[in-house]
Image (tube, rainbow, N blue to C red; front, side, top):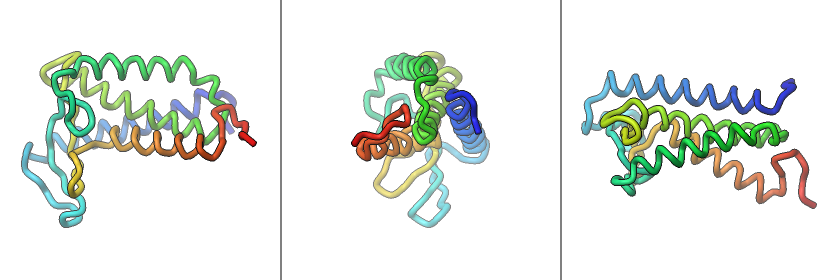
Length: 161
């Protein structure tokens, strides 16, 4: 179907970025920061917040580091993408790339400005930090790639015996 390995990765990443950006724009235009809005009772709520740190709001004073790290991850994935010939690996890598770009865009455009911009978060589960579509994409894609690795499926399509 696809003739070049980069194409599926770029398509998945683009879809994640579009979904992430459009959901964050919706959240910023529809929600009030700090006020929860139940979606599925207590199971899922919308709760707009801006996160200067990493997941779970850790390292809030190192925002510049996450911008640098995300930039490195995006560059590395783009540089290595042609080596990834397994379709399932392309899906996982595309999810990580799209999520990294989504949060990197926030760090570039949100206050207090690049490279210290805060990430827009708005999805809240019980006993879990507030997160966004990009965060979900990175985490779920990473879990997916770990499962592939544990099953012996390599990025080039070969399988460990």
